[in-house]
Image (cartoon, rainbow, N blue to C red):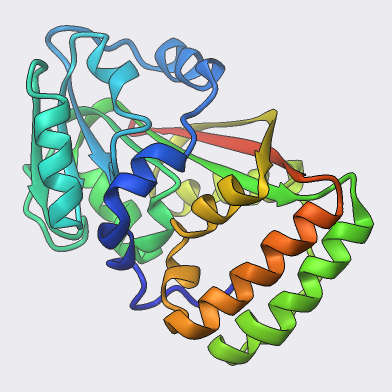
Length: 264
C-alpha cells in the first residue's frame, strides 16, 4: 500500500467535492452492526474520521449519541451543521491525540478512515474507551477500476506510471481486488489487542462514471490532490481522453469490508 503519511489533511481542502462524490455504504453493513450490538436512545458512540458524514446518519437514526472525531476543520464545520438536529457533537483532531473517557461508549465505528490511525495506538484506544460488551466496527470501501475493460485499465496504468509514480517516486505494484483473505487478516488484528467475538463480511456493488465525473472523484483522493497542479492537470487530461476513447464511461467495482470485534 502506498505511503499515506502527511496526506491526511488534504481531504479538508475539497470538502464540497468530497461530499458530492464519495459514496455511502451498503445498508447490509449497518444491519450487521446493529445485529451485533444493540444500540438505541441511551447509547453512546464514537466515529473515527467522519469526513462529510457518509457513514454517520444510520447510527444517529437509531437515536444514539454520536461523538465524531474528525481531523479536518472544514469537515468538522460541515458535520456540525449537517447533524445539528441529532444528538451529535464533533471534536476536531486526530483520534490518537484527543482525550476520550475510558469505559464510556457502546460502539466505536470508522468508515474508510482507521488506516490513518497507527495500529497499536488506535486499537488500544478503542478498547479503552469502549464499555464492557461494547463493539468496534471497522469498515471500508475498496474500489477496483475498469475490472471488465482491460484495455482501458492498461492505458490508465501507463499514465499512472508516467505521472503519479514519477511524482510520488513510487513503483507500481500488481493490482489485487480486495478479497476474503485480506478481510480475514484485517479482522484478526483486533485479537492482538484483547478483542473477542471477531467477525467479518464482504459486500459488493458497481458504480459507473462519465469521464468528467471520474475526474471529480479522483480529485477527492489525498495522493492525487497532493500532485503538483500542472502535472495533475496533464495527468487528469490523459485519463479523461482515455475514458472517452473507450466508450465514455468507466466502471468501479467496489468491495466493502466490515470487521466487528467486542470488548469482553
